[in-house]
Image (cartoon, rainbow, N blue to C red; front, top):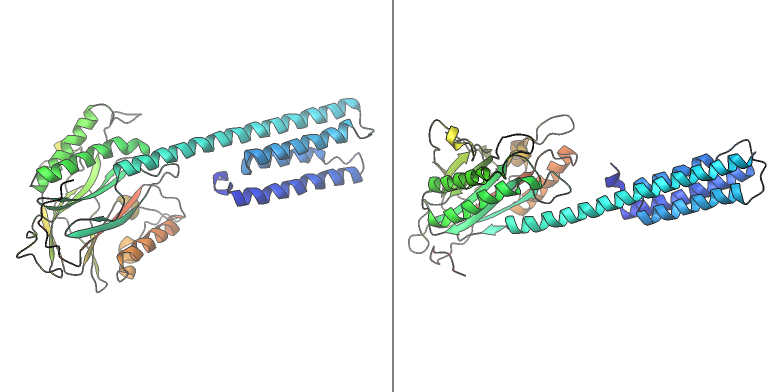
Length: 389
């Protein structure tokens, strides 16, 4: 747990305490009888510094400790035998050297983690666009938290794109977590973005995602390090294909929003009403996750969900619904949403994220992603065709 304590402020405070500790050891040792030796405890200072202070602070503590012991046993007059004095100086030097070596290793580890975090952040920017995402019909906002603190991106993915056929929204969860899931996530996202524009049918787009993941797994990159199992991805794909085109005849902003839904083994979404009601969307035939489609006895099904006027749709990954507290209890998402249903989207997301952290004690077991989709309050009279850039 030392990585949590190695903050600059804590390290500075501890550094001062260790300096005082060394001074106290030396003073007491000189004022008491030679038969009461406390200098052996001075070696505790550089060891503690190595674990909880910076590398430079450890060097200072170690140097002062070694100088103090060398002066006490090698310079000041004493009745202690020469062999004993030499052994004390040598043992102290070994402890100081070991502490500095540990501090150096910890510093190198922190530098490596910093580089990995920078790599993860760059990968996140390349793979996942920054929320919120807007189309001509809806706005999708949310948050994403990686379970691994040394990586900013992991196994969850999301996207919302404007297409000639309507808005397409995706939220998914790659089996596993951390940077090792980037390949499968990238394969699914790339297939989703491409198929969204060129395939009118939502089921056809899901089929393209299945094929993209199958090609990734067939390349051998999707194999688990310790087994022959391939990556699979749970996904929830939504489309506004049933919404009339923009322009003449476009429904008012307060009209219900029909959504087409294909569930590939994913967590069911929730509809949040303006009156504070929260209901889970009942998926009639949830299909198997992407990557396991060939095992299905029947093809995936598509169903329509009507989002009433003023309602929002919340979709999440199982990193939220299966997040466990210290007592082993799952996170009560539905109950929390009922409590916060009246909050604006931004505030609801901020509150949900903070409460999730409190529930788990900051120890998420899996990556967690949450998306909230709501209709734009003003209808855009521009043609449905996306802008070409």
